[in-house]
Length: 331
Image (cartoon, rainbow, N blue to C red; front, side, top):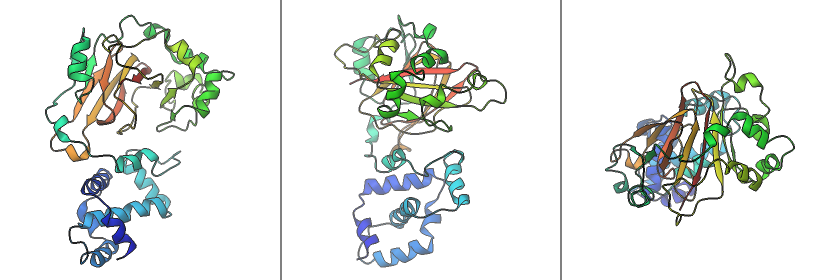
């Protein structure tokens, strides 16, 4: 048996389904891939030993190896990014670790989402209802009065975060070595780049280059300042332990995060402090025909709660105001 056939034999049915979904999301069709001469040759060697292995699995194994190992011309690289809705300019990798993680993500039992047809909206959400209906299910909810007794709306601004992460701060030093930074489709390499951008770009002046970024704060001094202005959302009971890490996302209207799925430990909430954000949720590929796509608009003062480990999600900033959100996980 060839090495390629041996590798193919190790694929489970669920992994094959995920590889198929990856190719389809990239704009390829099964017929296109299965028709490749190299795939046909490989299938001819494998067919007598493993009749149950379809052409798509072998083709996608080859495709993944090519993406990971083979040098690609500039035209092919640009096509890879275009198929994913991204610009090739400033991109350092064709495939990042999240992309590879998504490929081999554990398949979802679609029964957990097949009856979900929309994002609920609630006010005065009790601990009991939150635990029963939302905390550990796939049912997303927007809590319209979620930021009760917070001062974040008045305090948080680009300038506020610039003061926390100034050039001489411990928070900025720690952000480079200890915390995660998400540049999305920007040229920024770290928070130092973000908070040194020119005022016209921050103020969204005409012809200024748009931007959207996110980061995790794991610096205790920054956390103590942030938590003067927000606290555990009132609907999350005290028995539910919250993460000590804050997640902050910031950007200008017309931009946001591309469709992705998270790899975090627990469900999470995200509070819309400033600006308006449109959320689009998609079930995993294995549940496309059983579960619905969902959408929600989250306004300042509201909190969206969802399991971002199970819902693929993208965001798009609406309106005319800079969007600032902060969130965390709970168990």
